[in-house]
Every structure is written in structure tokens, then in C-alpha cells.
Amino acid sequence: MNSQNTGGGKAGPTAVSILGRVASTGFAGGLLWSAGGFIAAFFKLAEVSPNMILQPISAGAWKDGAAGNIVSICLLSVISIGIAFIYYLMFRKIHSIWGGIGFGIGLWGLVFFLVLPLFPVLKTAAQLSSDTIVTTLCIYILYGMFIGYSISYDYSEVQKETESKNSKPLEENS
Image 1 (cartoon, one colour):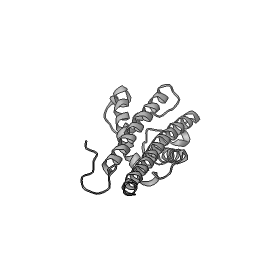
Image 2 (cartoon, one colour):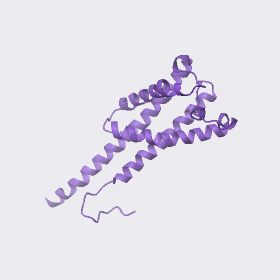
Image 3 (cartoon, one colour):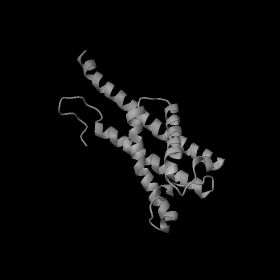
Image 4 (cartoon, one colour):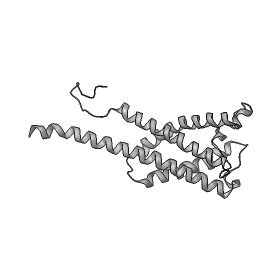
């Protein structure tokens, strides 16, 4: 790729590259932390696993096995891209780890109090064990920190790079 600007406008990262970073951060976060959720369910630390997303679909018994878990992890990774864009649009300027922690807690609340009751085969949040609540809350906090800190850091670096490139012509003229 040619990084030189031939149009005479501002040089620096394009909107496409920034959005690509957000998408890759979302996919990686979804892949990493939904796999963590699978591991937690495998070791019986949580009553829910990533394949809960497939429960409303009457697709057969495969959704409860290894294939269902792989499909669920991939599906959650794709959904996580959208979640990363939501974070980017709303909270990208928060340059603190607390923004990601709050985002993770809010996302956990959204999933376990608004979305989980939509799945009749699953228990409500009040019926889940304390191990499940603590484990899943920790996974969501780590997910929120990963998404939040990565996106905020990228945004900060892009801003610094843009400011640096915009100020270079002024320095060269003096």
C-alpha cells in the first residue's frame, strides 16, 4: 500500500483503517472471551456456555456438542464486531480502564437480565448459581476491558498521529 498522500489533503490513517482496527478488535475479543466462557462451562464454573445463543434454534442435537460450541464461538465473534462498533461510537474517548470495566458490567446486565429471559430453556439470572454469576461477570468485565482499552488506545494513537502529521508542514516552513 502506498502511504503517501497525493491528493493534497490530510495525510494519516483513513476511516477505513480505523474501522478495520475496531472490527478486528471486536472479532478477537469475541473469539478470546467466548472461548473463555466455553472453558468456564467445561470446568463447571458456569452453568451457561457460548452455545446458549443456539438454544432458540431447533437445529438438532449437534448444537449441544463440540460443533455447536465452535459455531457459537464463531457467531459470538461476529456479533462482537457490532459490540465493538457500539463501544467505538459511544465511549472511544474514555482513556481509562474503568470505561471498559463499566462497559463489561453493563453488557453482562444486558445479557443476563434482558436477553437471557428470552431463552425459555435457560434459567433466569436469579436462578443461576453464585459461581455462574461471578464467573460470567468476570469474563464480561475482561471482555469489556479488552474491547474498551484496545479501542480507546487505538483512537488515542490515531489522534496523536493525525495531530503530528498536521503540524509537520508548519515546522518545516519555519
